Length: 197
Image 1: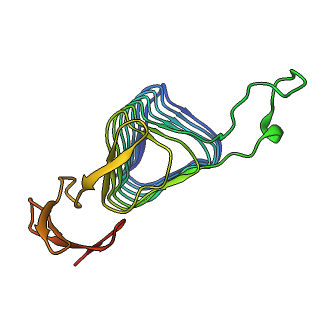
Image 2: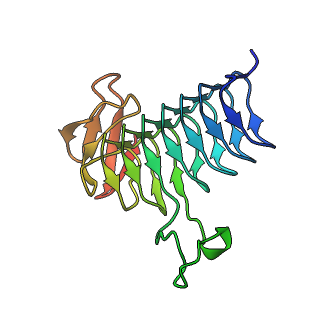
C-alpha cells in the first residue's frame, strides 16, 4: 500500500515517507524528515527539520516534535505532547536582536523502541526515554527515563514498571515482575534497570 498525504498537510522538501505512512489534516513535516513505514502523523502535528521517525510510530494530533528528535520503531507520541529542543530559550540576543538559528545549538529528545509519551506531556531536551517506557499524561520529563519505567507528574518521577503491553507490572517478589497480560517476566538488575527474563 502506498503512503498518503492529506491535501492540507504541509510537507517540506527531501522528506522520506515510508510505505503505508499517513500524514493527516494540517500537519507540518519539515525538510529532510525521515518517516518510516506504517507511521501516522495526526492532524495539526509538527515534525521538525531532519527529525528521524522509525517504523510503526504514531504522532497524535497537535503533537510537537522539534528537531533534532529521534524516534525509534513503535513509538507513540500522544495528543499535544511536546519534545523540546532548546535548553536556554530566548527570543532575542543580549543586544535585543531577534535570535537566529546560528545563535543557539538545538538539543534533542531520543525516544527508544516501543515507548509511549502521554497526552500533553512535555519532554525537556536533552533526554532519552528508554525502551517500552511510559510517560504519563501531563508529565514534565526533565531527566532520562529507564527502559520499562512508568513516570508521572511535574517534574516526572518513576512510580512503577510497565511491560510491552503497556500495563503496570506485578511485583512477584525476589526482584521479579510479571506482566498481567501475557505472564512474561522481568528482573530488577539494579535499582533503575529492569530486564526481560
